[in-house]
Image (tube, rainbow, N blue to C red; front, side, top):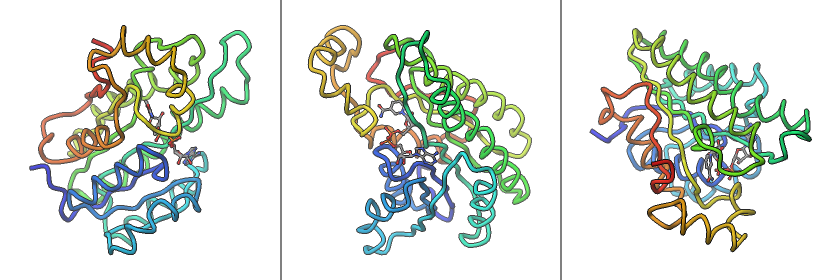
Length: 252
Ligand code: NAD
């Protein structure tokens, strides 16, 4: 029930900490994967070993802010990999800054990468999946920042993630008639490049573990990947429009 044999998955932001773990978990569950990232070299470095070991994996550079490239990637997935059954909208950026002085360029880019690309790529993938006529699954990587305020300087990021949680529901309702399920995962603090600056702040982390996270530890990328595989798989065949918190209990 948790297997994905015969399915093709497209993952964005795959060179990053969470994306790479998702790609490997999808491969382990039997899927063929098209792993994409803006950082083409990082992608090649990250997955060199997997390719050498013969993984059912193809790499492609993709900046999710480029509409034409989104469309070309979906087409290439259907044509070269034979299908598009699973989309994981994982690419994301975090540009902290106080709300009254927040840089307008950072605001535009955050919304573009974290929200608009999710809408646009889900639209393109949804059309391709509907045309295939065999259903599909979309998993959006949101954040608990889309539900609670973690610190005073994440307004654009948090707003973009709240928007992702909302459109997960809109897409779920509208794509249901095509047998396409749409869900989100909301990670708490996970050990990756993105959270490095917080993880090395001892006072911040001590307070967080003592007062906010019942499981009293940071999460690992594989713990997000497991939730992604579950939501993508037949084990979640009656789950749609849901946001699954994977946060050690932070937002309880
Ligand atoms: P990361 O910084 O390690 O990786 C992000 C990846 O996205 C990078 O490889 C980067 O090159 C890529 N990327 C950035 N802009 C892009 C663009 N325009 N087009 C394509 N790729 C682009 O971060 P991560 O921790 O792996 O984060 C993955 C996702 O998980 C993000 O959406 C993030 O918001 C979300 N998230 C992470 C945490 C956490 O604790 N790490 C918590 C909540 C949510």
